[in-house]
Length: 473
Image (cartoon, rainbow, N blue to C red; front, side, top):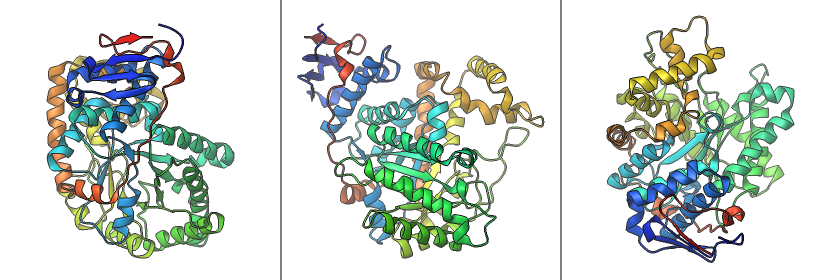
């Protein structure tokens, strides 16, 4: 093969070809078969960057052609803020482990329930410890949709793009620039929804609420303007702000008002006419991952639904946003989820329970291997008062990245059993959260313009998925 750009490549058993730098899909049905899996595996585990980049580009372009495209939920949230739709709570699901299997279950459920208003997300911290950079994450989410035959916009979100308050105190410019660098990488990959978390900068030592929230809204405006500058043509990225650090005191209407008044005034002064926030994250009694007891069980949560309802209504009525966002909800009891759409909560973030389900399905020998790895590599995170159950529960997420390839390669029967469990869980959550039938709202309000990309520069060296390629130069 020559070192010039590849002229042709045949992939997915002949269903897809690359010719003169463009992707052509000849058999859409083949995408929903195991013939597609080799291309996805190459996109994640390809031996070279060129192999991975090529496979990611092909999957992106297939999605562009058949209507599986990253999109912003901003327009739907804007419609909700105007009272044009409601009665549902959008689940934003952090896919940390076995991402292809997990996301496939989500898309299977979405097809069955005609759901469209759901988000696939990953946080700044999760990107690091799960070893899923934005380009890989977007590829796997799109591939999962294609594999299951889903069609429609795919909402991929950067969760908790957070400013670390300790690092900010030492060097604010460097810390904010680190978040901006992640924004650049994420938006280029296809993250068209970004949750900016500067709530860590709230200073409760100040006398007034406006002064307490000042750094929060000023830095949030700075990052918001940066996000807007990175938007591709035809896309208004959905941006969320946050007023209360999850796991601390519950948020109040006065805090929301202080933040939003400061944010909107600052944004209007610096960038007149620029689109602002579509939602606001608040604290209402939960914590990320839940509170782990000595026996490994999770403590009950004192969820304040009245706070959620009040703040959501304020966000819609006064500021035109979709409403409030509930974080740290994954460990809530099943009976709690039906309350969120009743209280018109805009969005709910779910992560830990899906991770727990995976660990509960792992073979005992693999689990012990992971625990042994944690004993060595996470020992500095162990508190003197931690039981083994507490320590492993809190730290096992750190093993997801190092064991990623092992987890993806679990036996088919085990993956099928976990997939069935995920199907049941996502069916329950989607039903309880009221997103069945929301495909119609997405079709009505959301636009997902085509975003074609050129063949990657390094694609001239080696390209094809294993056992599935015919390359010609």
